[in-house]
Length: 295
Image 1 (tube, rainbow, N blue to C red):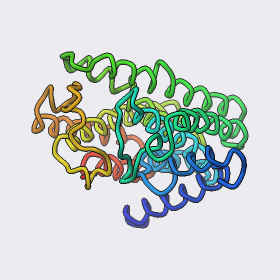
Image 2 (image 1 turned 120 degrees about the horizontal axis):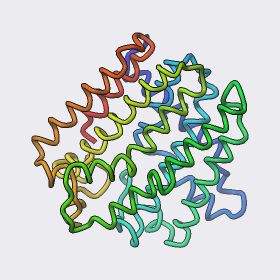
Image 3 (image 1 turned 90 degrees about the vertical axis):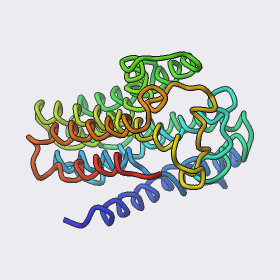
Image 4 (image 1 turned 120 degrees about the vertical axis):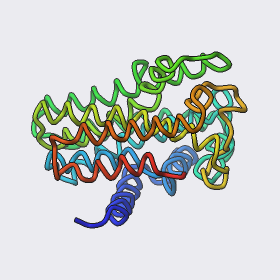
């Protein structure tokens, strides 16, 4: 097995190529929209969701050629959410992945259309590529991503987030918000990667529990980094949560307890993989990466 850093770089390079192939060239009309779509997606990001899809695919002996397309669909949904989240009506941010946000670089109308088009492209990929052994499984994959992106997933979590500004939330309410806002798409990435191969019900349940733990851990660490890291390190504006009076794990628990919670969630994620043994090695490494990252 190659070391984790080399594996991660290989997956990230693969995704950059796959995404570049799926995104319409900027020379094709409407040129400005296509240029902005490519600007939003390419040349940045950790690609955590695709990495999780590839790692889950290893558990179910999935063909990498299948997984890369499922991973691209998830990443396009994630990219669209960032474009819309950064707009003035949402988080009103000017920096993402170390460069101006899409509405700043282009304009607000174009940014809206970029998000719309990226979401459509994600489902085009899921519908057009042979990703599973049978049609029922592939249809389930479409449903998994649709629910993860919708009102019972990411969009619903964002709505709760916007409605919670300036309001005190308890831990259960905060977790409910982030299970939807951040966790739903991370869970979808793991399940889509797994569905590209063959998994028992027990294995799928184990992967699902792992994904729920990692989804929350990712958000806890994000909250800590927003409070403690610099804008240069993050590639986005640091300290936005506190400036906007948003409820976070840091504001509720304090940074030290939030870091402890991330470690507890990592331990739970590792425990969820015990029955999957060696094929889950990459997922274990990704759990460590999510909790230990500094950006």
